[in-house]
Length: 571
Ligand code: ACM
Ligand code: ZN
Image 1: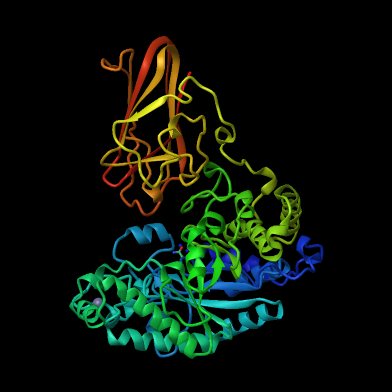
Image 2: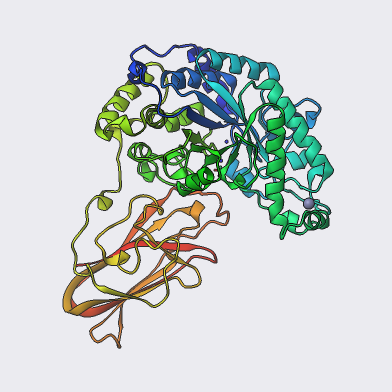
């Protein structure tokens, strides 16, 4: 999930500090019991934004003090190829440089554009082999293995931009997934994995495997023929074919492969590890297939998510992951390890990256060391507060935990109001994915937290959208009706374009009480948030109006956009 000019001076400061050793009073350093999990990892995405070796060493110092033992580097992605690759100079001369530092604007601009190194305004960078070898040795001295990740077959726009022979037949535009039927694809995979194995002594090599769009494969005559020849029912299944190929290649180099959970399929090499990201449930599926599992579900381990009320935090991609939610993770029995993942689409500076890492990665480290025996969140939070102070004294920029705003206050208590337990008729259905518990969700007294995935927000999709009628059971005197709406752009969730409340005493004749139009327009580039998430409470207040039925209707801002509501509060 990404930057250089302002970095120059910030990195200079970072460099001066990078040899500062953590003080021996690290809360974790007293831990002597054998670790609960053998893999205690931290992933840093250096593709979306390039972070120099000095920054990485500085983090190694702290991660080592938490007994994190793996630093996974996401080295390749559309936003930039990040290491010197023998035989493929175009990967570092061009695919490592993009037209602007702002990842969101660059991404929204359409066809991903790369420029030659040295072009005025070019943003990016890459590590030389010597730099990586130096980092590997530095980390090893501190008990940390650098685990390299190169992405196949998806997240590869930068590769196909400079190696068009890896695109599907006939495609002259951008392509995010390498073509599985292009012979050069396999030569490329072989060459890259051999070079990665030469640079990194890591026992594991990560081959990515996530989020391949596959759309070009469907229209590619060569891919269609290949799927046919292999007896596959769809070109989509070429994903498994290419993942198996890359993983077997890793195994043939004497290393163990890792793939994101999208790579999960049968017949992967013995010793394969699956890195869970989409849901905790994926872990059991991978365990059931006999693979090792590294537990890093976005619900507990995605450190790019804001850790405090979104309005108090920098713009980010995705949800809300406060420290207590990291701590609350429950890795299933049998997993090999846990890992925190720092995607950097919206993280441009070392300070921001450190703020997102600390202290949440400390919680992940403690889960990794102590498992179920980790004690209470309350006692951990006290140690985390001390650790934040220690990091600040060392010149790091952790999140200021002591001034945390915390969960949405309204979400902390079940409230009483006149519609609690009322019968709700859905004139149009709610989403089967975001049910918030079903037909009582909007009158159960529970309001949502800052994020749509918390099980309290009920979702309504464009075509049906929001249309409910509630029955209070008898005619009641009502003074106010209110409902809150969540906006979270990257999830296509917007406050409604229009919202109306109507009331009735008999359930047949309704009188419009209030209609609002929201004038804010949804941005076009909906993959890329431009506004922070927020919650808009809408209410109608009046004095002593009699009603039994209340109908609420909302329309969406656009095709494919959601409305999310948590509670219809009637007083
Ligand atoms: C991922 O977040 N696509 C692994
Ligand atoms: Zn193809």
